[in-house]
Image (tube, rainbow, N blue to C red; front, top):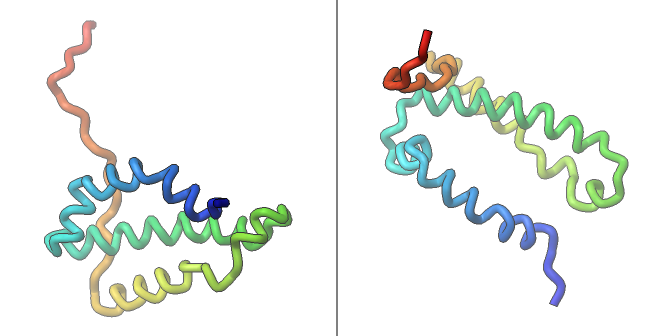
Length: 109
């Protein structure tokens, strides 16, 4: 039996997907305890990623890419709609801040 691209992708990324679902962000979102501004911040990040990805996919000329991508799969407009909703209701994304490193490491002078 021949596997589809989606099946191969799903199998090949299963471990990463499960690890992502175990993060504090994902578990908080699933439990409904993620602060709204953090959720909106993540949507804002998705907007940047989806914008670049969908733009490139729409211009692709490779037959394989064209066989698996079509404009009806695009999600950017949906994310932008959600961001407008939250902006209209007064919720703005919390700015991204890099994770702080532990201060337990010592450096020699």
